[in-house]
Length: 267
Length: 264
Image 1 (cartoon, each protein chain N blue to C red):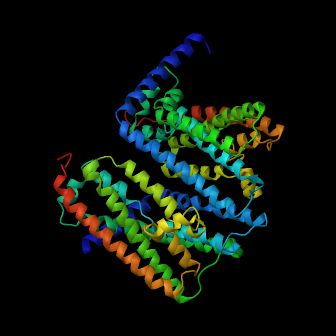
Image 2 (cartoon, helix red, strand yellow):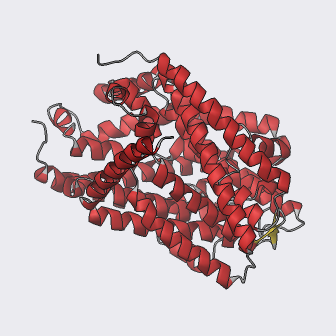
Image 3 (cartoon, rainbow over the protein chains, first blue to last red):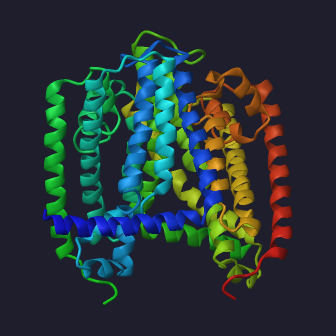
């Protein structure tokens, strides 16, 4: 990508960022309430761990401290996702229904970029830092040994996971070009993501395969956490990056194909 | 009553226009609870026991929770908020009907369809995972379960109505809604049976109506609510319904006086 093109996209992204800040500043009280509720929700997830580990010492071979880290990785991954893409692509079906997609297609910039980044969830940044502090507290409280290499690998795998999630988000939402209304399908897809907060070892083999391929819920939390604790094999790391590249390639091809099927509702 | 019957049948017809959407929503509701049986089965697989619950009971508990969630748990607060916030209430006020009663029959229509989906789900789980699913056999247990499922539906509808009606004063009330969902997720028994919770949370749950929403009907499904407890459980449930109904009516009467009727 030429430097000029990069500059142009960066400039547009900065405008989206400023707009999002402006939007959230209109709802300061609501934002603080939501951040408080998010914190309480994290505590309710911790309660689940406590209830489970009140009955057992290990869950699918994972210790309590490891499950805490897994749960926090799942939440942090969600914040990273919320910040970079969030609900933007989910709005695609509405853009198609109302014909608003025309506005994006006629701009001299990649339409997928605009649709994916138009609204940035600023609250995710604040929550991200709160959750990182919680992660540090958990690491100190349970005296969890973390190596620099493990942390770097986990961060890299999280980036791989974000690419995979983005690719699948494009694939699912592109179906809107044919199905028009896919809210329910998307809700179903989102429900499956709840499975990602527990170790993959608790699920049957068939589900494990599904969660590492067709419904890729294991990548955002399980894989990076498993890598952090040395439970993820080296060939698994290669698989993640190969799968990320392949799924993004397929998603972009499918997006371009779907875009050709678009018949505007407004013009 | 004819106009409310019309609301009931119209809701059913509306939802049946998009059967795929309805099915996907129902599956989403049910699948949320499908995680936990795997988690508890992993606990049993490691040789541990779940206090007070057999392997069969703990899996059946979540199947019962999913069933009750599908047939009794409502989400009407958003629709009420939107009606008030966006001025849709105007059209209801111009008609000769009781708004809350209309919403009730509308919600009942949706739950009527969910009842069929939940029934199919229960039968398929029993056929596919027969060794993991316990179904109540005695007539009395079935009656207690149905009674508690009806109480759960009424409490859920009334709590959501109260939340929705706060829009008269707050306009946007998603903060209150999210707070409710948080409290609901902890105290309803959707995460785990309340008997497995720390003692202080179990005590707190006794002073709230939320255990009527999932935990008590699910326990009745497992035939764990005995005849001595039953009368007390029903009596307290009915008191909650009366209290919530009173609050909802009072809020409606006060709120309608502050309503500005956006869009008139």
